[in-house]
Amino acid sequence: MSTQPPIDSDSASATGLDFADLARLGKPGWWRYLVGLASIIFGGVAAILVLGAIASIIAPEALSKLDTGIADWGSADLGVASTVFVLFLGTIIIFLPVTLAVARVVHGRPWRSLITGRQRFGWQFFAISLTATLGLGIAGLGFSYLVAPEGIEIVFHGRAFWVFLPLVLLLIPLQVSAEEVFFRGYLYQMVARMTGSDAVRLLVPAALFAAIHLANPEVKAGGVWAILAFVSIALYLGWLTLRSGGLEMAIGLHLGNNLIAIALVGSSASPRLAPTIFFVNDPIYVVEFFATLAVFALHWLIVRRLLRG
Image 1 (cartoon, rainbow, N blue to C red):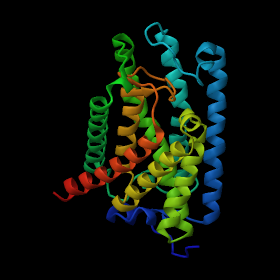
Image 2 (image 1 turned 90 degrees about the vertical axis):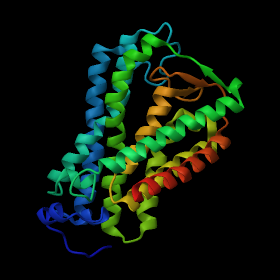
Image 3 (image 1 turned 120 degrees about the vertical axis):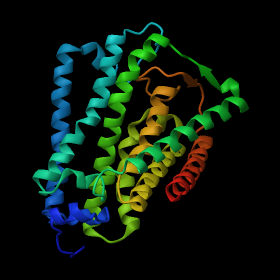
Image 4 (image 1 turned 45 degrees about the vertical axis):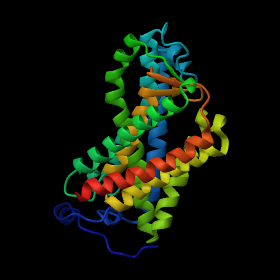
């Protein structure tokens, strides 16, 4: 366990620190991290139960569709569908304010310390990572369509798509931020407080991230290859955090990935929470896994080149 002394919050804000070192800000006792972790879990679950109770009263039809999503966007009730979307993402987004509050109340340090080791949010890191992810995703989709057009179907429903677009652009960044602040922020720094091993700092949050995604329908359809895909995503997001000194690049990649998966390309195994433009009928998960690894390699080459340039 690390025995390094705590760092004064004011001096850290003024000079900038390595992202892992921010675990020593404020009140860094290891027991506080256990209290903080329990507070995040119980606080988030309590908020979800309250949200569910309210939804069961005012939107029972939407609540019943949370597991399956919307089967036919051409005839969907967009009021119910948008409520399903908000409820589903709301159960994740709620952890963002809870985690930030724990940093402030339990550890007595700025909530920004869970996001970046810089003096301010690195918008350049975020923008480059997001742009590279979107570019690679769209290029990959185009390549797949050229090679095997029979496997990709155009399912554009204009009215539903344009109704959902503002919700997607508003809520997906919040959902992504909630996951990154918890897994690559709080958990990463919690592990960093207890060990100096970069491997352990990467593996623990990645394992937990993959574990909570085991309930995703993609895992049921893709088996071990889908699990490996989630593990690789978690490890690469952690790698970006480790190498860049903050969550900006991880948030950018995660956001780009989710925008593509939720608003651009759906599949027979994914939850149909929002209307997409394209639909993959029978995804081949072993191919998708290796394609994911290739995308990460290209992503790293692109962002490293652009940041150096």
